[in-house]
Length: 164
Image (cartoon, rainbow, N blue to C red):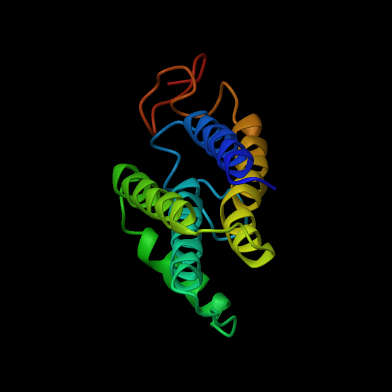
């Protein structure tokens, strides 16, 4: 694929990802389980960190070297999930945006879009955003009027019609 096509796909995938995240009330983002053990905030941070991995690998390719593929990905995922648990939404999103920008710059610096460069970029940005967009959208769809924040209630407040 051409570089411009991949960048356009990335932009659309990022917009869809952020759109899904925004559907989740802010106070639910650090707590609700989108997938077992992972909140919306955790997934935002996770997606950003993987964009950072893409940036690292693309920077290696841009230097004419071959990146290794022997990293401890599960250990990284676990460490990132633990780190994001104590971070507010603004911080996880800021981190994700910085890592995304780094991936975009690194992809822009690659002279030729080789299969390897396309793979690192596409899999760790476009495809990864789409995977978690779907999960977050399903989670947002599961929220309803009884969920605090859905109709403007503060967290912990009884929903409309609740007995007092």
